[in-house]
Each structure stands twice: as C-alpha cells, then as structure tokens.
Amino acid sequence: DNGNYELARTHFEDVLDIYPEFPGIQEKYTEAMVKIAQSSMPTATPAPTSTPDNRGVEALFAQAQQEVQSKQWASAINTLEALRNADYSYRTIEVDGLYYIALRYRAVEMILAEGNLEEGMYYLSVLENYAPLDRDAVSYANVVRLYLTGASYWELDWAQVVAYFADLYAAMPSLYDGTMTAADRYYNALIYYGDQLMSEGDECNAADYYYQAKAISNTDALQAKYDEAYVICHPPTAVPTATVEETEEPTEEPSEEPSE
Image (cartoon, rainbow, N blue to C red; front, side, top):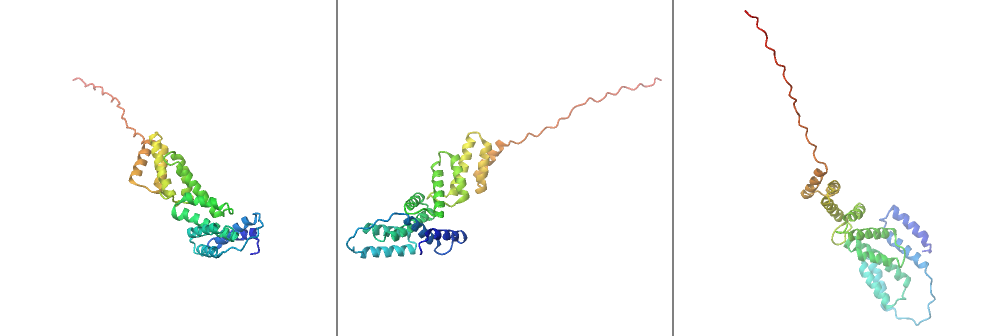
C-alpha cells in the first residue's frame, strides 16, 4: 500500500517458499509484479478532454473484478478486452493488473487442466508484455517448451524423444497435450527406441530400454521383446561335455604251469 513494491515482492516470495497455500498469496504476488512493471513505465500527461460517459465501462470493470474474484479467468479476459475496446484509457493501471492476473491463471488452467499447451504458452508470452513472469509461471513455461520440443521429434528421432521426456517424466509426468501425458510418451518412446535398436542389431542397448519401460509398466508383449533382446545379448554359455579317456588295461601274462 505504501508503494514499496520491490520489498513487497521479496516478502511475498518468502511466504511462497514457506507456505505457498496461504490464501491470496499468488494474487498479491502477481499484483506486486504488475506494480513493479508499471512503475518503470514513463507516464504521459493526458490532454484535457470532455468528461466521457463511463457508465458502460464501469459496469464492465465491476464485472471483470467479480470474474477474477470467482476465478472465471476466460470470462474475465473477454470482459476486460471488451472494456478496452470501449475505452482504452479507462483505469488503465487497474485494468492492466486484472488482465495480468486473468491471463496468468488462464494460461496455467490451459496447461494443467485442459492440455492446451500451445495456447497456454502463448498467454504466458503475452503476460511478459505487462510484467516479468513469477517463478511458478516460469516453471510452467519451461516444462511446456520441453514437452513441445520433445514431441516435435516424435517418429523422427526416438533417442531425442527419450532424452526430453525422461526429464519431463521425472518433473511432471501428468503433463498432457490433449493426446498423451508426458509419462505415456516416455514409456512408448522407450519401447519404440528399443525396437529401432533391435532392427539395427544393437540388442544389448535395446534390452536396456525395454528394461526401463518394464519398470514403468510391464506387459506380456514387452516382456517378450526384452527376453528376446536379452538372450541375444547374453547367450547362454555352452555346457561342457565330460569326456572319459580310455586307458589300456594291462594284459595279464599267462602263468607258467609247472609241468608234471
């Protein structure tokens, strides 16, 4: 309230580290980020104009506030855009703050709840025109980039797919793009890469990738693939055959009978 936005940001970050579920902390932190960005912008002196009729935009502003409070992010964005189209100069700082909050949480909603990664990523990029992204938003942006890059190699380079989704499987296995989760992509890529290695005659590495897939979820078909690769890579050793050497038995010399 005193305009010490950088100090406020520091305190909010401490609270986020200790108790991220504290009611309203994300909204307050976001508000501080918006204020920091706005305080660095040059202010223009408005030219004197006639008093506009703000009854329509006031209603839209009140509606947007209510929609943000009730976490109706998509509706809030539409309302704020309608407000701007009606009067771009109306309460710009407060409208920008509401718009930032609505965009930020709508982007996260798209990424985590809807599997709409590309549009969620677009919203995050728009956010950066208003203020720096908070730490959680930066984290979401990073995992989405990782997912989209890894998915771009699908059926083109299984080694790259495995490398990208190994990290995602560890960090956010449930991340979803509308078709598969990160865990699904990692699991299938391990098997497909194993198949590729088998076709190239690299059974030992194929067995290793099948083994990693088995650790996630085993099936009869996968077990059969693994067994085949493993046996080729580690063939059973031949059982030595015991041989018996034949030895000549000493011949008995006839005993001389005493002659009668």
